[in-house]
Length: 273
Image (cartoon, rainbow, N blue to C red; front, side):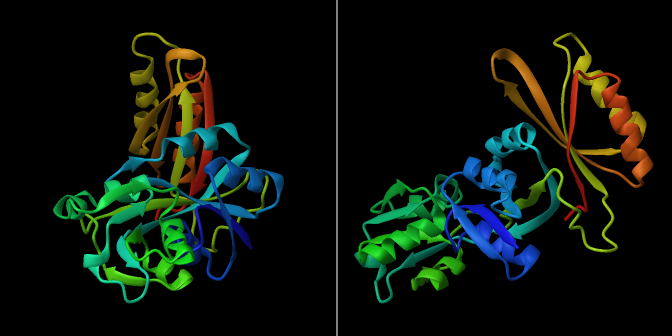
């Protein structure tokens, strides 16, 4: 399989793809829109994208892309995220003057960075890309913050491991396929979770009524997120995740929403991680 990811080889998305799918060909992309464009065009068989981090929150852009494009969520996985200070082999901590990484990674390492105020903190386009840059340019006074796989990929050295603020740092990843792609779900792994997007009329009580439809259907609402509708100020699309025991429950939930909402899209049915 060819799997597109946002970022470089050695990133957390690379690690998630490998954990979910084994030995696959990874297609690194600069931005998330490019990732899903490759899937839609058929240049990639699928994509692995982060959707939510337990410290940083949701990746809003990815919700927008899932709604806009003809793709579906096929599978999800949870990964414990560990951030490491990675340098050129042999570099000592005292030599460092600057730390670079993706802004989300930097925000998850605030305590470590606050404890070392001499280090200038600079945002970079990717975690693994920061290590690639340090190694390619031979920078002895700069460290990247990235997964251990990035050190293996580019020949760096983990100077300090596990510098994230909290040990309970997890990211939820989605495997995304084209909407018309054949199922890739493992045998015996029946779906018990569904991701939906819906929009309601801008009137009093419409959101409460929509959520009541889910409750009556007997599904368990595990997440709700809102995103603005472009061109319609103060109107929103709501994204929800629900758990269900039977396919009939899922169908009842959909029927209830479709009878009440002006737009409903199933983003995917899959096995909960």
